[in-house]
Image (cartoon, rainbow, N blue to C red; front, side, top):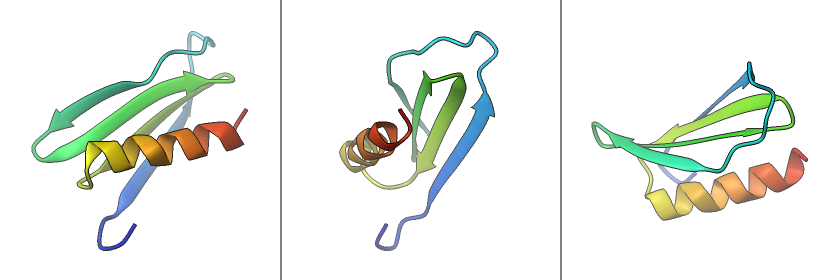
Length: 64
């Protein structure tokens, strides 16, 4: 996204339940985590949290 890389990690969700979006900041990186449809998702980037959450919403709407 522009000059920012976005890393997306997708893993099977052990609990197999949907969860709300959680956000964290670590060493200048934004992390967004949620679970949906049996999969756990992690987004990691140095872009603004607001932009990363917007990306998460778009991605989430396409994975339902």
